[in-house]
Length: 618
Image (cartoon, rainbow, N blue to C red; front, top):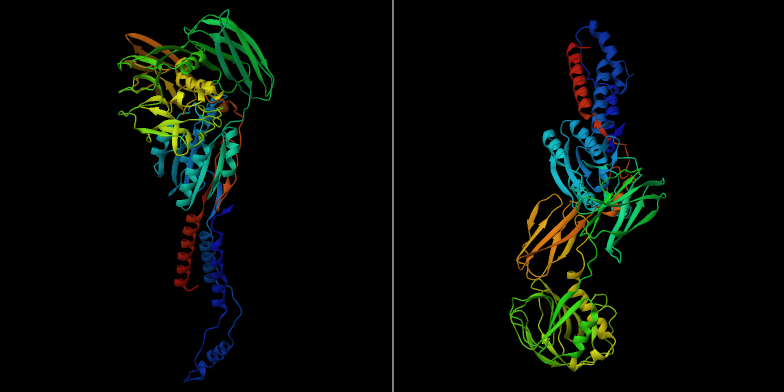
C-alpha cells in the first residue's frame, strides 16, 4: 500500500471531535411544573448538572465515525501497486538507440519496450494522462499530456529503432522539465540502459516526482566488427579487420570479404576471448573500389554490427597551380616537397573557368575566385572578396593565437622576423592564426565555400623561409588545402556532420543512399557539410566533370559504443519528492492505482445510511 498525501493525516482530529460531542451533556433550564406527575421527569433531568455522561452505544455515532475515517483515508490518497501508470500524468520515454535492435528470442528489445509501454496505455484509468517521448539522437515529443488511448497507441506504433545513439541526458532533461511544471507527474523509462556513456551521465540526471526504469533485455553476448580498413599493397589490396567480443564467453566464427558485386573474395575463421579483440588480416585482395566485411559469430545478440564497408585509401596526387609573376623559389620548392601535389607554375592569372585542387597566388589577387582551394601570399589590392586596406610596417614579433590549430601546429614563430605586411580587414568565415601586435599575419577559414589561407606578408620581406618553421607550415597548409581531394570520404556514424570534399568545377553532383534513393547535391565550393541520416551502409557520390562521371564512396556504420549490449539500470538523482531511483521491472511497468474515488463514494454511502437512521429515530 502506498500513501500519496500523508500530510493530510491531520484531518483525523475530526474523529475525537465527533466523540467529544456525544460525551458532552445538553444544557437544561429551570421550569415550574403544574403537577407532581411530572416530578419524576424533573428528577431525571437533574443529572444534566454534570457536563459529561457515560458514552452509550449509539448507531449514529458509529456511522458518523466511519464516514469521517473514510473521508480522511480519501484525503491521504492510498494506492495499491499495479501494472500501470505511476502518476496522474506519466511521461513515457522510449529508447530507440541501436542497442535496442538486439534480439532475444522471438522479439527485439525495442519490441519488448513498446509492448510494455502499450500495456501502460491500455490500462489508463479515468483522468490519467500520458506524454510520449522518443529518446533518439534528439529527444522528440510524440504526444503531449493526452488521455486518448487510440492516439497514444498509434504514436507507439509509429516508433522504430534506429542504428544511431540516443542522447539520454537530453531526453531525461526534457522529461524532468515536464514533470517540474506539471504537478502530479512521473517518468517511466523503457530501454536497456544505453551504453557506457550513460554511466558517465548518470550523476547529472535528476527528476522530480516518481520515476521507474523498465528494463528491456537480459543478454550481453555480442561480437562486432570494430574496424575494417583496406589499402593498396604490392601484390593487391591489403585488408585489416578488427573483431571485438563484448560478451563474457569466448566466441568463434567466420569472416568473409565481399566485392562490390557481392562476390566472395576471401574467407577466414576467427576466435576471440571474452572481453577481448582480435585482428584478422587479408592479403592480395583483388582490386575493387569498395569492400564489404561480414562476420558470422556463434553467439551474437546484435546483427546490425556484423557488417562494415571499407573504401581503399587513394594514393593519388592533387593538382596545384602556383601563380607568381615575379617567381618565388622558396615557395615553389616548399610546394614540391609536400609530395601529394603536382605543382604547375605560371605568371598570368586564371580566366575563372579553369579548376585545380589548390591555387597559390603569390603577390597577385584574382578578381574572381577560381574553382579550388586558395592560398594567397602578400595580397596587393582590394577586390570584391578581399578587403585589402594597404600595407604597414611590423613592429612586433609574430605570436600564435591558436597553437592547436592544424595549420600552425609545431610551427615556432618566436624567431621569425617580418618587416612589412599587407593589412586586410575582418573577413567573415576567416579566423586569425598569427598576429604581430594588432596586425593579422596569417588567416584561415572559408572563402565562398572554399578553404582559404591568407599570408599577408611577402616571404622576401621576412626571414621565414630560412627558418625550420617554414617547411612545417607549408606542409600543414598543403595538407589542409589538398587532403580533401586525396583521401576517401568518411567513414561516419548516424547523426554526425560529415565534411564531404567536392571536386572543383563539377557541373552536377548526385548522392545515392544505401536504399537506392538519390539526392541532388546543390553545394558551392570544395566542401559540403552533410548531416548523416540514420541509415547505415554504402553511400555513393557521383560528380560530372567535363562530361565524365567521377564516383566516390563512403560508408556509414553503427556507432561502435552501441555494440556493448549488456543491460544497465539507468538510475537518476532526486530533484523533488517521489522515487528517485531506478527499479528494473523485467519488462513489467509497476505503477499504482489510487483508491481515493472508491473511499469517497463509500463515505457518501455511509452518510446516506446515517441520515436514514436519524430519520427513523434509532
